[in-house]
Length: 311
Ligand SMILES: CCC(=O)Oc1c(C)cccc1C(=O)O
Ligand SMILES: [Ca+2]
Ligand SMILES: [Zn+2]
Image (cartoon, rainbow, N blue to C red; front, side):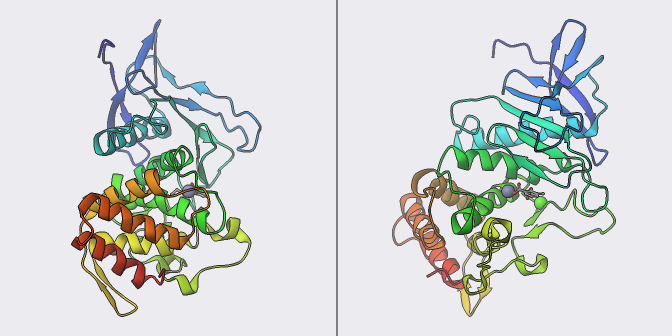
């Protein structure tokens, strides 16, 4: 690459040392990765609903950056970018190498993270429910996957399509932060070790259904997008890890093949109004495309959706 690489460093939200790509303009250094086109801004506690969230590109007098939220937001965006490029040959969220912008210190003690249609937003948390949400790789991967979904299937953010939108973000979140089936564990309830925002292996542990017959049909949470995502999350877990549910046994095929199936379903088959049954069909078709019509991978997909009652 013609650009001269420049490495920055700093401690993340959990106190761990990280390295990342920066740039120098004049006598200041900036969280601006010109190779991946990733830049990180400080929203300086502007309210998350303010029409235009402006921000100050994070800078430092030296190559060491002292704001842990900025360190993690920048480094984890790079990790997520690299995963999509290496694993699926996708260049940024729109596959057209569009710039990735992250804003930290959004709102006041905001227990939230979001993709707002054009940039990523991270709250600092209130210190009880969350610490800075930029501090978790699976959170950042979840948010950037909302952007990927927007530029591919563009699943509507309500009811069943919305639950699938949420599930795709959780699936890629655990595939990128790939040492567990938990979501948000690194930044959730600092005073309660060992818990998480969601579990894909056991959705019910955090009050999500793991079977279609138990789906939420009310109006809260845009028709339960963070509730019913548990059903598809469990299916994805079963496809990868195997297991038994509602007297159906699934022979797992591993994380690598599972993420390939879901990425293909998201980018080739799902649409804005896909329902859970369409997710089943899209996953089966994707497994057929990738591994053959009578493959054990196709069998695992069918078994998993049988197990979660999407038939
Ligand atoms: C795993 C990241 C996540 O779920 O972020 C959200 C939070 C913490 C609150 C509300 C919505 C979201 C989201 O991105 O869906
Ligand atoms: Ca995790
Ligand atoms: Zn989400």
